[in-house]
Length: 158
Image 1 (cartoon, rainbow, N blue to C red):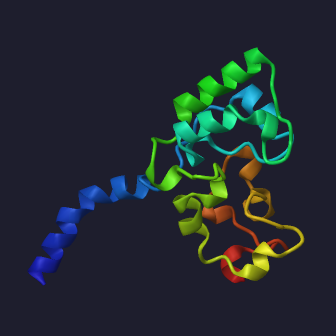
Image 2 (cartoon, rainbow, N blue to C red):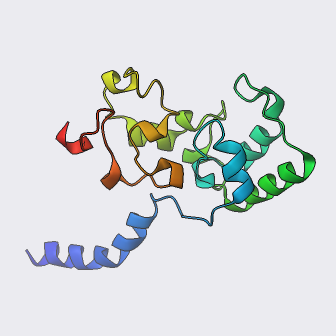
């Protein structure tokens, strides 16, 4: 019993750091990023992709998932700077060969328990439609407390 208590007490100081390691860091809103990106989809928090992936994405806006999302030079430079300053570190769980946030290991790990029927729901359609379940997605909040099923029920009640 003494060893169990000792182990718990020794691990206690690490708890806040491990709890923070998995959370998206809130960054100040960026007007141009919000306006331009949320015109078609949720303006994803920059920490959802690596800085390198954001740079690649921003260099191919003329072919942005089937759409031409080009921007004027000033707006493009402004948004690039914002994403470079606030994107995740390179590699690991926030990188995606396809540049899709839904293909990152972090997204897959967080959504592995979502049943197929949810993804196929007409209100969801695909993983990029964050607002279908995350009530605060349009404000950059993906808190599990605010999760709802597409029909409005709390996630844990489903």
